[in-house]
Amino acid sequence: MVTDRTARIETEALAAEVDGLVEPTEPDGVFRDTRECGAGLLLLGLLLISPPTPRPKTDTR
Image (cartoon, rainbow, N blue to C red; front, side, top):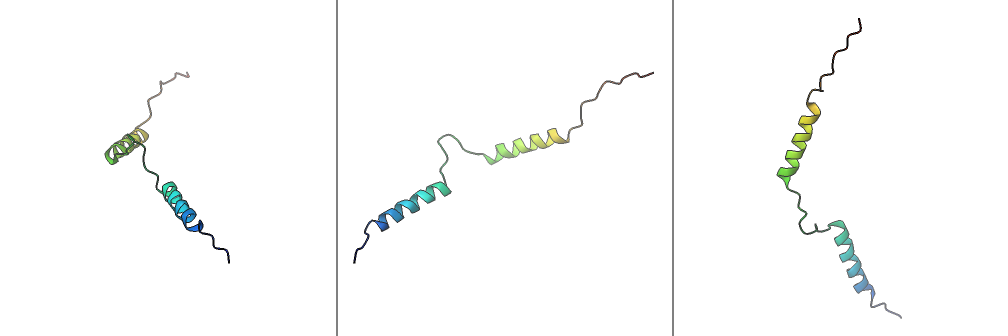
């Protein structure tokens, strides 16, 4: 009977590759700060709820 001895090594390598794809590490220098994200969302929200700029009135008499 023929036994495949490379299957375990290939399975471990595949498992390591899948783990790396599922949870990729962040590149150096790129970190997401929760406070910065919160401040950005707050600013965006304030811009969205601010009143529109007034338009000049036109005389149609």
